[in-house]
Structures are given as C-alpha cells and as structure tokens.
Length: 269
Image (cartoon, rainbow, N blue to C red; front, side):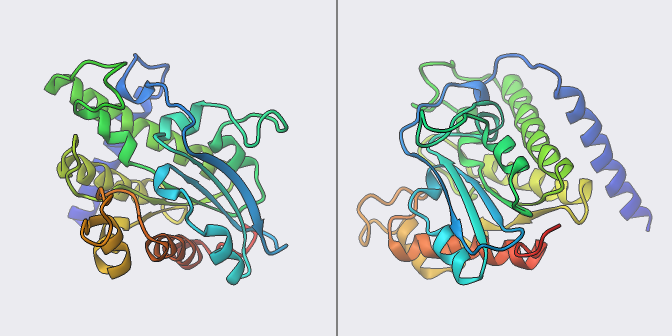
C-alpha cells in the first residue's frame, strides 16, 4: 500500500510541475511551423450515437479507420496532418477542404464532436526535434542537454493539455505513442520516455485516459512489422510509416479495437 501511495504521490508531483508549464511558454522545438503536405479530414460510418474521433500525423495517411469502424457499427471522424505534433493539433486552426469549412484546431473539433472516444496517434513528431532533424533545422539550432530536458517537460505539458481538454469535454481518450526505435535523427530512449509519460497519465485520469501500446503492436503484427522495417519487401521502409495496405489495415483495426475495449466507443458517454 505504501509503494502505491508513493507512486501516486510521484504522479501528482509530476502533474503539478507540468501544470505550471501550461502557462504561455517560451519558444521551443514543438512550436515549429508545420506545412500541410499530407492532410485530410474525414467523416463516415454508421449513423449511431457516440463513435470514434482519430487525430494523427503521417502514420495515419491512408489508414482505413472509416472502413474498419463502419464494420463495427461505429461512426468515425479522422483528422491527420503530416509532420504535426500534439502542440500543432492543439493550437493550429485548419479544415479540409478549405475554404468551404470553418477552421478550428483538431483538438477543439474532437472535443466538440459527437464522438464518445478520441484515439490519438501522435508522438513521433513531438520527440524528433529533441535532436537535430531536417524538419526542425530551419527553425531551431541543436539543443543542449539542459534545453532538451526543458523541451521534454514542454512535450509532457502539451500532451497533458490535449488530454485534459478532451476529457473535460466528456471524451474517453486512447493515446498511441511512438515506436521505441531509433530513427535517422532520434533515439529509442526519447520515444520510450514519451510512452512512459503517457502511461503515467492513466493514473492522472483513471477511467478516462488509456495508453495504447502501438510499439508492441508494431512488432507483434507481422504485416505491420514488415511494412515498417523490411527494406527487401518495401524499399522505402523507414521504421515509421506503414508501407503496405495490410500494415495500414493493422493500425486501423488496432485503433478501433482498443477504443472499443477501453472506452466502448460505440456508446454515447
């Protein structure tokens, strides 16, 4: 019992620190601009109460969330932006197709939607500017170790801000973080640290926030693993983006099944 109390005290302590960081913050890597290279906003599926709202980055491009959700009798909304982090989805207003819609942030759109559950697939772009990266180079010099620690705190603060906004709107949140593998410009430890924070948020928001272990799925599902890591099968495999129809299908099934099992995504909250 004592260890459980100590663990919760630690989580509360971290939460208090992060809440202080939610004040208007200093310029940081996560504030970098992000162009609309691959982006879309979709809605479809069953005409039923509740449903699933997906917020993603380039990993979500061409992932058949709508089709898999419809098979489960779910109404599904999807918003993805290549290169975007939690910060960008929380602060940047947009819609598709412009100019025939009212721009709003992805987090606001999800909070105001009829969806009962929000599945967030973000993290890779949150951590990649911790190290020198072409995506960040025009805007940010390499970080010192001290700056990197501060940046991690800001990333945690943004993650918390997104989760809190959605939960305050009555949503159940399921968050799939990054794969814990090294990329061209980031370390596996960076991804593992972010996933550790996402796991901690389950204790901050018990019953309303769930960590979805996308890292484990990416090694357990053979089709997804091949599409991510096998350059002989997929010459453009980069360890991040699913390069096959089967790999993208696995991600959609994971999103829908996890949302249903954790939140009952087909039921109005």
